[in-house]
Length: 377
Image 1 (spheres, helix red, strand yellow):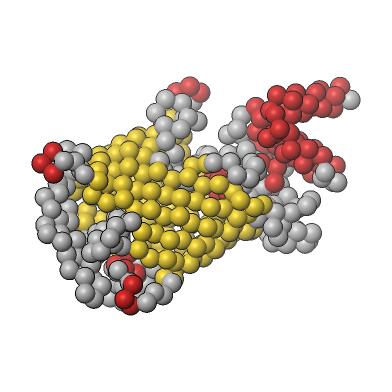
Image 2 (tube, one colour; image 1 turned 45 degrees about the vertical axis):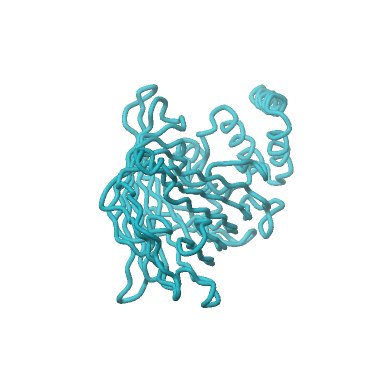
């Protein structure tokens, strides 16, 4: 009885101190009718309030069931008790896309999307005379660009809608998101041509996310499916103009190993939306940049307590999905600087292939980058 009263006091304090943004989430737990699920919801929110990184894996009843109210399949051994779930590492995919109602944040909050980074890059010869493949386009005069430059990545997103198809007492939530990514290449060290920005790509995106939580072999869990619409362009006039529109479908799964290491896999395939020939700046871009990609990440901790360091290794493979197609490969490494749960990371990347940026979509380059990132996803 005393523990129940203490629990209610903790909930009240969290709501009072957290303000309106948190209060609505806490009150959402009170609407859960099942006693065990309601208590689990409050427990999750209590842990989240005390430590935002202490997010939980989904309750065992969700595994193997894809429809709210359907009879659940047996849960895997790694999620058979509340105590095991409380001690488990958080699912990065669940946290990133707000797949569970108990840990979801409010709509229209501005959040990070892809890595926000500042890095020095250099490699094979930079494209000094970009050559578009569109009929009638001719390259401009050669510009004395240098291989070494500063690369700036900015990327944000916000959740527009939640609970479109999965709402009410359902523990899972589908959602609609808007994202924007900008990647700039600055010839900072090129004083001879007044240090210009060589290229800037803009990428607004709309994506719908649907949660699943389906147990897979080998300890993996299929977390979500998604469909999106994305526009990408560099905002320049002919003959340097580059742009395309795509629709895509995506799926993502993750695994938390017994030692706490986290693994994620994400697959995406897309189809370019057709354009009139006289308006198409780059008709063969899919053959170079690709029509699909596979992205993987491995995150692990080293050390304990204040000495803990977070490491992340990642790769991305893109291919045109044609026998004569091209593509690219990208490897990344991130290491926490200061606190492991802080946002600052050492960021290193190696890219080889086509499409590092839109201006050079048909140019094969190998580029190494080293810098700092504020976001590790």
